[in-house]
Every structure is written in C-alpha cells, then in structure tokens.
Length: 375
Figure (cartoon, rainbow, N blue to C red):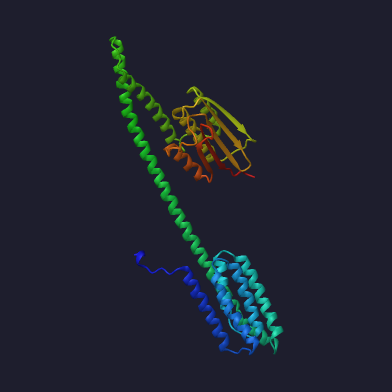
C-alpha cells in the first residue's frame, strides 16, 4: 500500500511553502494601508524576501529565523502593517530543529524592537503605534508557532526512539537465536565426535594389543577426533561465556599467552601506559580478540613467535597481536567467522579493528576500543 502513495519531494514542499507565504504576505501588505513611492517598493521587497527565505529553513533554520526577523522590522519601518507569517513559520522550523533557546531570544528581542520601531517611524499616539506593532507580531501567534514546532519535535523523537527500540529488540532476539542454534549444534557435534573418538581409540588399542599394525587412516581418525574435541570444548567455553559464568577480561590475558606457549609458540605480553579500570565489555572484547588472534596464529599461520601488546590511553584501550607467520601483503585475509566475530565485537563498542598482513610477512590484529573513565 505504501508503494501506491504519492510522495511529494521535500524540495517541492519547501518551494510551495515559500512561494505561498511570500504571496500571502505581499498580498496582505498591498491590500491594506501602505505607503507610496520608494517605501512601498522597499516594503514589498522585504515582504516577498521574508517568504522566499523560507526555502532554506531545513538547512539553516537559525539563519532563516534571523533573516525573517530583520525583514519584519524592515517592512514595519517602511510603513506596512501585516502579520509576519514568514517569521512564524521560521519559529516553527527552528523549534522543530531543536533550537529553542535561540528562538526564544530572537523572538523576545523582535517584540521589543517592533515596539521601538513603531514609536520611531509611525506618526500618531503611542497607543496606535503599539497596536500596529502587535498587528505585525502577536504574542499568541508566536506561542502557537513555538508550541507546534515543539510538539512535532517531541513526536519525531518518540518515533525515532520507538524505532530504535524495535531494532535493538530484533537484534537481541536474533543474537539469542543464533546463540541457541550454535549451542544446539555444538552439543550435537560433541556427542557424535566423542563417539568417533572413543571407537577409534578402542580400535587402535585392540590392534596394538593383538600385535597388529595400526592402519594410518585409523590413527588419523584418532588424532582428528582428539583435535576436534579440544576445539569444540574451547567453542563451548566461548558460547557459554554469559552472565552465568565469570566474565573474562584483561586479567585473564596472561593465561592466554601462557597457553599459546604450550603450543610451541614463542608468545610475549607487553603492557604499556598507566593501567586503569575499563568497562567489563571492553575487557571481555580485549580478551576475545587476543584469544582469537593467538588461536589463529597457532593453527593456521605457521608462525614461531607472537607478541601481544596492551596499551592504556586516556580515552581508549589498544590491543595488538602480531605474528611472524607466512602471510604476506599479497594475501587477502579470509573473511572467516573469527575475524567477523572480532569486528562485530569492536564495532558494537564504537571502536575500530584492523586485521591485515604485515609489510614483510606475518599478520597483525589491532583493535582500538573507546574507554569512558569515571571522573
């Protein structure tokens, strides 16, 4: 149904409003009592100019507010007495854009200046001059324009908040469903692989007990089963790292480095800067980045050394993991789930992630995580 609706471009709407308001102001000014000669021309130009200025009310609402206010003072000084519809529209637009304080200040100043202008440029008693100034800009109309702009601004904010809430709810439900599927798949695979592992070990044991030569394929199945079991156990630990388990953080990174050393990888850890507390989400993300980077280095990079660098800054935490593996600048990093997961974690915190081959050889992972420190 939405596809069948007629959508009018915003530019066309702005032109229609500007031309309509200019014509209304010019017609109202020329149809009433007005001066002759040069003052008539000047007043007509200012009346039309105030309406045309509304073309820019979306891009520069405060500028349009000031321009229409000056035009209003100008045509009143020229001798025209007509309600300043352009200024009321500009008040509505400025308040809708969120510029409430400037709008109030300009409006109060304009009300005072119009009174003074009427006393200076109009003949007759002061009461008539003040009445003419009220005809140009009445407080009731001004309050109505302000209230309309504020009401629409609040409605738009509520609509944006509701949309943002719906998106966050949908994203959270999708994450929960993905986690549930991952856990179900993990549990199922763990059971099946455990059966394969046990059966292969029994077969190897029985063959050796009978003094028979163990086939190479059977030994390969046994080794693959053990490796798959270890990987699935590590995956389960990551999947179940939620509110029911102690959160991993920066204090656990040394254990990751020690574990990497146990895999024949010369891993070192360097901490730079003055250490301070960071949010738990930042600590967990730093831990997962180091964990994923070291795991990839040990399994796929054919590296012998790896360096982990944690740098504390005043407003950010830098996490960098380098290795001397076989990757070269000509190699594009494969978009695997590990790299994708790291990027999602960093992006969710408003940080930046760089994962690419080093200039000579090896791979580097650098994450910059924003930190909001308590004052």
